[in-house]
Image 1: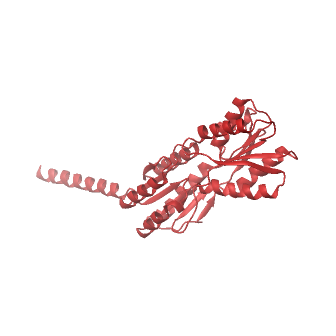
Image 2 (image 1 turned 90 degrees about the horizontal axis):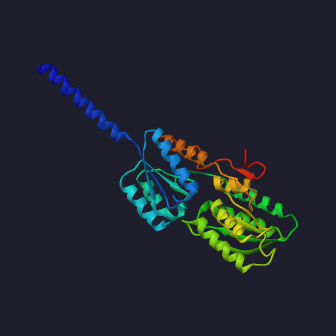
Length: 307
């Protein structure tokens, strides 16, 4: 009996130590964003959580609800807990530059998903924002042909991707003498649909003449949706809207023949998969493939929105 009891105790001890060792070896991934309320950001975060679970990683999500200053503080918190990797989603890394360097000093790799790449990070996966902006802007200009383009710009320059899109718009607009910028307005985040709808309502009241506004260029789909809602509610004709992202609500409005005529569908699943693959490589002691990686994007119009 004593011998059997000794064996049972030994086995229990081995199992306990094994369990402790497994728990200790579980990699901890911190996913940080100020914009979880955004449809596409939420999609990427959920994909990263799913991929983390599939890889046996313990993923913790931190959302600072639009507060970038709080994001820096929370990043310092996760660095102090010695996480194995940090992912910044839809975030300008320049706003947490000091924290990225602090993570590097502790050998904690920092990845970007739909963010940007700066020195100190492991890598970033996104779309080619300049190429997407060129694609949607040229399509918008083509839709109006030789008619005067009185353009409203709804954007959010603090987001690195949206900034690149807006800068490309600025470049193309200045090359086209037919385009006049009526106004550029920054959209509030969180709440971009509601905010852009109110902004557009005010702009329509201030520009009542037909042709005073002929197009709305939105830096992403949610302000495009808000602007479309305002235009429809006001019964205004002759105004077209474009966005970027390809979210389901925007695509549905395109299919229905609303003022929203086009968007560029980003591959958010592809971004999350690229980041996950690079995290896996780095955790295995391997180098990343490339510092900046792009997932392909597609122009969506009424012709292909239902496909």
